[in-house]
Length: 125
Image (cartoon, rainbow, N blue to C red; front, side):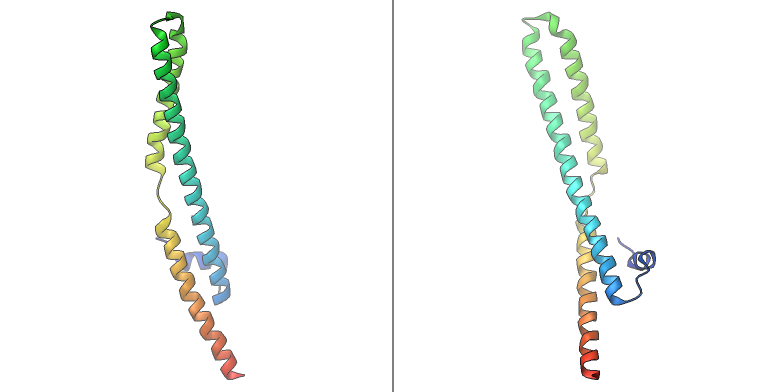
């Protein structure tokens, strides 16, 4: 959960306009993090699938050509590495949608506040 008071303090955002900019910047960071998360998850899954296919192909060829044992062992090591990376992504891969939604909600509140400020200024003029 985002602590917007800390975000505003860090950004030195004291006016509603500055606060809106800080919220939108935070939303942008969360969207980029979500994009990166999805890309890295897909990349890890693709690498694992490719490694499994490579080991499977070498396994079939190994019966006819025992000289491929080193290639098979290297491919198996790559498959293990790809599987470890894929499993680690599961631990690191935390969706950013709650933060993104929280930013949009806060931005909406600030926009409503700003529209009220503009109306008050127009009425006073």
